[in-house]
Length: 603
Image 1 (cartoon, rainbow, N blue to C red):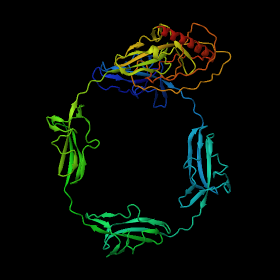
Image 2 (image 1 turned 90 degrees about the vertical axis):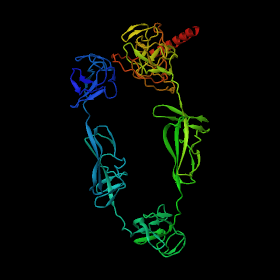
Image 3 (image 1 turned 180 degrees about the vertical axis):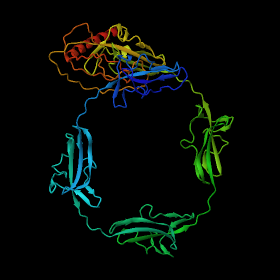
Image 4 (image 1 turned 120 degrees about the horizontal axis):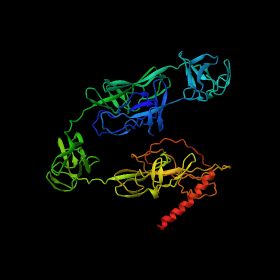
């Protein structure tokens, strides 16, 4: 793809959509990043993709695509295809004046305590600012010399008058809008005189055997803390029930009694050491717990339990699973637990296997659990070095799936401009199912958000193409028919109703809005994507004049979302439709709808 301005000047380096590929390889240059809406050039200029029209570089279609270049979508069919998108420079408006907001922090005499902080960087005038946000107005400040300052209360200070926010009133407001090149907000603080520090101490826990030999490194319960700080050495991890030493031995805390190391209480605590709970009251408190070696019994023999999965002929269909790892004899096992005995198995080659019923198979006799009887029991206890339980499966032949398709409806004016959101008439329905977009999704009237009213065009030839008696664009898929595999896209064409503006405008009173229930969203590839625009169904009879009667327009409930047609170029036509004409058209719509329904009933 190449990207040029109206005169054909390249704006950015070409991009490769499809590298060297075989003929008939599909390509699409509208994918993400390939057709940007705007381009920023190195010289700081901004370019926007052009609408449909004639330019010095040549004729451009509704995709901003230079028609003389290759199609934006297609298949590789020659050595090099070049697709060109055309852009036009966007002239930026002159920038507004800008300013910044700075916060300063001073003591009562105006001495700076810490570096100023920028609340709002260089920003346009009228940008809101707030210097009370987190971190901008700290309650206390710690200076590099170790002093602590606290924000002052309301009052008069040497630096000036301070309000209830600790804000120097002679400085700029603490909240507001940028309105000058530099706004400075000042907060005032006063030094906090700390009381003389109390003496401090620490609490250490040691772990020894009956003879006083250390079993593991001491632990610090309470680091250097002021006297009267509470401590508790029985908290989690501080008084373990057992200790494993590096030489592989296990020690258990001793019961109450007399030991070579000394007298021990019911907590395994050496009474001659400091209390296990209390308050810091000296530079160093040491609490000692006493342990005794546990002589382990000889270990029991161990074994493992493995589950295998095979087909009727004994061929493995997935890797074996370990139910019970290396465990002592008599350890219970159960291979029917979740995930261990799946009802079906999907193999890497895409085949599906289902567990077999009871019966005789080439691999052997299988019980009602799909278990090969010649393998070990599905439940039991570990009683040998390796137990293998085998489940047997049979391939399931899947039936081919039924093909489905979708039908989408789009709405445009005579020139192909999108008027409202596309809707889904049929979604993921079986091929051959009958559909009818005339009855289901063909509103006779559409009201756009800017108040313009469009009605279905009569049969004839229009800029967008030939239209039949149903207002259906004949170059799109049939308005009625049968679902095919894939997508069908049906388009209806509407014409703007030109009406005079009433002398006395009437303010419409909106009716109670209806909560829409959107249908299932889809992601098809429609013929003509359109931009979403809410619709209002009306069925007017334009030939019969009536006296305008104001009505309250009610937006139509949105239909199931469908893929959008891409917006065709805007013709520039704009017309405001008055409320009185809305009433007239709505009235005609009611009469026309009744007539149509009656005609359909007679059919």
